[in-house]
Length: 245
Length: 56
Image (cartoon, rainbow over all chains, first blue to last red; front, side, top):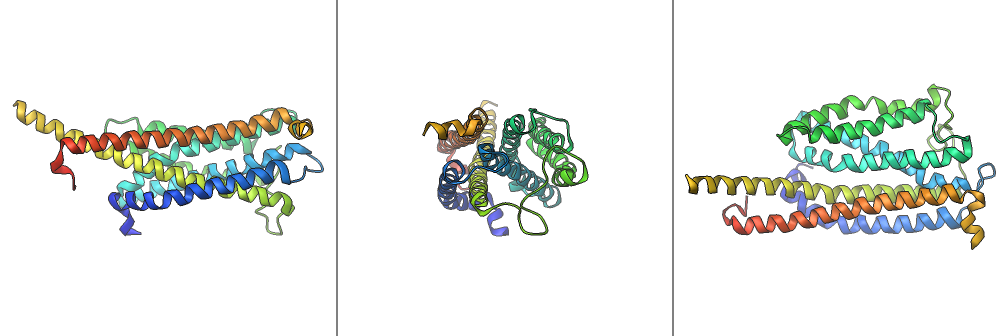
């Protein structure tokens, strides 16, 4: 692991891995969309509106997955002061915010026909909204200081404190009496979902995961280059200052 | 085909959801790729002007 922790090595590794994860993203999403929109059946209770599940549930999983990764990056940054961890956090936060927003929007579009309301202030919906604000707060903090390292550290602390929200989201449907239904997949007994619906759900979830990996690699490479550019401009600036002095 | 577009009466909810998800993910990818390409060009330019630091 330590070998890839060097920014130069990471750039090379990311360039090698990216075409594969990008191809897997396209493949999984193409197959997933075919099953989600065409090949899978409607639900006996929810009818064709069940097709919202194939974008809503993977978005929700990715929102939590992104946040856990953000918190891990924060811990690595604070404990080992590793520069790549800070860049990873900066790269992942907007992606996580997008997935959380998509989860809320698709959930709202599903809630209106199924529950008769776009929004309720119940435990599940509110805790996911808080997750969205945590992502926004993280992004704001990383950019709030003139010294990017300080911003990264402050945001890492926020990410770690906010991690308490993750189990609250997960168990909110069990702890409180919410309008939102409880989990169908991660139960102690067998998943309460037929394979004809499980296949598109998992394909979309894998597609979203590969998307997350691909776009994080792209964004981390951009962050490394942005840092390198700052260093080069600083060096140039000091040379120019010497010449003029 | 038209019954498929109707989505059993839920077309007004299913299609916007898929379009918003696809649009958001595609836009985020495009913006990120474009930022990376622009930075690659800028760094190359800055390195050309500053050859001493090329290997650092």
